[in-house]
Image (cartoon, rainbow, N blue to C red; front, side, top):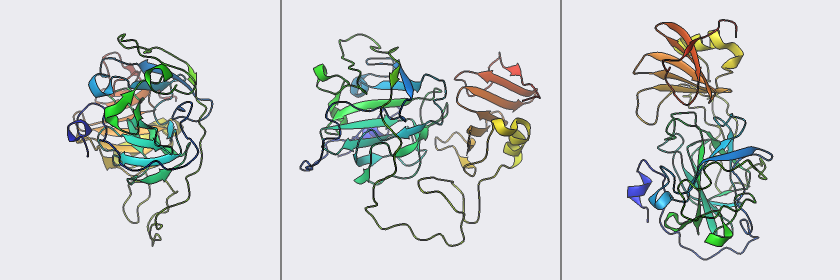
Length: 322
C-alpha cells in the first residue's frame, strides 16, 4: 500500500511493503551499491545522515553532487539489475524512482531526477541503464541545488531505510562503508567516491512496442521531447533571444517548451547544455548549465554563479563576447 502522506509530501518519498516471493537470480546488490553515475565519475556528499532535511523516514538519505561542478543534466543510471516498484511521471513532484534489486534484498530510491520517460510498475531495468538526468537548480524539488538524493531500503520498502554500511544492516556505497553513529549531518562532506557503474543499454522489452510514429517528429528511444504532433524542438521568442546571445553556450533545443510541473507558471525548455526557462514572476528569460546562469533583465544581460535561479544583487553585467 502506498504511504500517501510521504509520497505526496515535500520531503523524500517512498512506498509501502512489496509482496512476492524472491526471484532466483544472480545477486545484484550483494556487496556494494553502485553510484547512479557513469564509470569514473567523482562524487561527493553534500548532505549526510541526520542532516537538515534528512530526518524521520529519510534520516539515512545522502545528497550527491559531482565534484567537477557539472551535476545539473548529468545522466542518472540504475544502480541494480532489477525492477521498478514505483516512479513519478517525468518532471512530476520530486522526480523520484525506486529500483528494487534482482535478488529483492535491497532497493535504492533516487530523487530530483528529470526522468527520460514514464516507468511502469514492475518494469525491468538493467544496471547502468539511463533513467534520466539530474534536474537543474530549482526543479523537481531540489531546493535550488542540482543533486541526487539517494536512499537504501531493505526489500525496497521505504519504511525500512538503512545506512550505507554493513554494520548497520545495509551495504557500502560503491565500496565506501558509511556507518551511522548518531552524529548530525554525518558524512556530509565525505568524498570523493568514484563510480564503478557504467552506462548500459536497456534490457529486452517485456511489453508490446509503442505504435509506429505516423507523421510525428522522430525521437530517439528513451527520450521525451514534449512536442506535439508535427513539432520538433526549436527555440522561439525569448528562448530564441537566449540562443542569439549565448550561441553554443546554450546548445541546441532537446525538448519543446513545457509548463513547469511544479505549477509556478514558468515555461521551461531543456537544451543540450542545460535548461532555459522563462520566469513568470519577473518576465525574465534565463539559461543555466547548473552552476552558471545568464538572464535578460530590465537592466540588460546579467550573469552569476551559484544555486540561485534568479539574479542576485551581485549579478554581473554579461559580456557580449561569449
